[in-house]
Image (tube, rainbow, N blue to C red; front, side):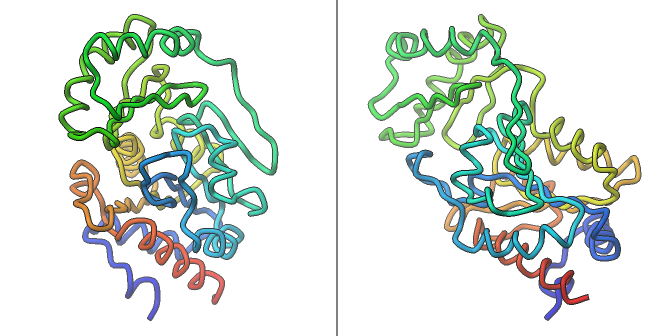
Length: 279
């Protein structure tokens, strides 16, 4: 069974996007989120690793398309390590929402926003003042700081309790808060996956894009693809719904196609790679 028979977008725009990718893959970019899309969501982000099938699928797919780009909130070097991308030619990683770039073994990164260091120092005391429940923990991403509630007894309630004070602290140092699945990330303004993806597509002169994501941070990338469609770019939006959990509604409602988590994404990438290399 071919790619178009296995993966049928529910929208005409998505079907146009698939046809464009298949017709001229050398002008296509495949864009991918990391956590929840290529790697299963785990309680400790430091233990996240790409699905075992990712490397094989990308090794086949990357040479057959214009580029494969992983767009993530993680530091680029960490995503390369956790994803096993170091020996995959043709894979580019845009870390920290595009503030960092890894390509062909080279990492480029500007100086970090000064507000991040100040927030990093003050956040533990700020969380203690508002009674952050046991299990709340802070992840230092270098260029951003994330507050996780996944390990608390009532994760969603904890997230809502902390949202306002975390937003207040972020704003006081010129940062913004990006919410995700049981996480609040404090990061510099003006950087998001939409801007990173748009810049990369324009740099590569792409005529089509397939982008897959799973969380609220990917909404900006979805919006960017929708905007670029209006400018003539063909696009396919894929929501990687969490296995055993409902997909993020903001993504699923806008997606052309919903697949079952990283396993579904691997199947999609592998099938696409096989279709393109069999030509």
